[in-house]
Length: 425
Image (cartoon, rainbow, N blue to C red; front, side, top):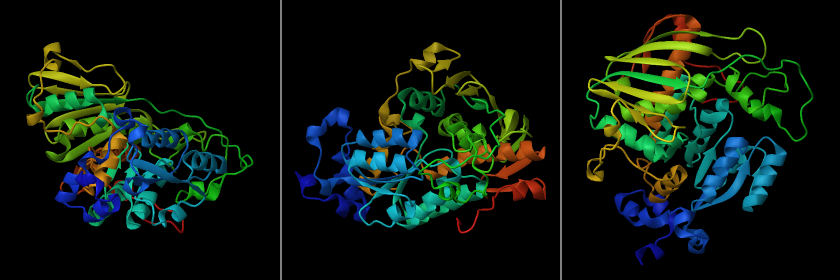
């Protein structure tokens, strides 16, 4: 067979249509093929893992399900984590992720660090010639989002965003129906996501053994270590490290909004809203928010609640809820509509990580189900909401120019964040 005579590295270097055609059968999930079909090392996509906490461990397992992928290295600020996961894949453990990126034997990296590290690590990885899978949310600011987008496009690497709902069949079907006009022209969109909260200890305590805390903080301001700072909830609810569940969880239903419509590209995005910002305790991101926005002529309401996106059209509505067993609609018959694959406007994939590895094997930066451009679109909405709430202003975003065009100097300044030396974008 032809594929037996073409090496993976040759395909990765070509990055052309012919290579893509040959590489197409290269990536099959282990459930379909079984480990007996594991290809030789020379034909596999080699993967490095940066950040192997809770989410990182889960993604490590997802890579294992893809027969054409081989995990070969792990970087994490916690010694026990990196050593355990490196032993699991019989690879090397790195305390400094830059050592992993300097390796010439790694094709792609999975970035599952705390939020404040996502773009700085991704940018360094892209500059090192690595393909990148980046967990959500994307950047800590609009500036970071745009910097990552620019670099990924310039370098022509494969990018996949950790919005796994795009590889869920019901999410695909709901968005595909909306795209095909099943509910007519979209008039409004409702987006809900779980709420944030207050609290968190501010009492400094000794560092746990084996944690490189200075590296963990990285570009974030240097702050005392407390019992809650490095916990999962803390990494989402501390403003130095995140913008809270506006993006940390909102990335999922807002991504569905982008996947199912181009409302955010249809005209100026005008955002205003209210919310609470804790004044005591460690946690200081927005919670109990209520955001109302205009996406061109489409009304958006974004608030805490269930994890759902509801598209309201001129002839009905369809609701896509990532965690639900099924979609809902104004007329259940809508959901029974047979979809002709030949008419698909969206891409349907069965496995998010498999989709990434397939794109890397093809050498095709446009092949993944979640492009960097669409990832930036949903993430920017989160940042606009945060800025509008914190400044108590109406903020206008120009999606074509990709800049804030109406708002105070303070609001415009919040489109970027300072980074602790020596880290830069």
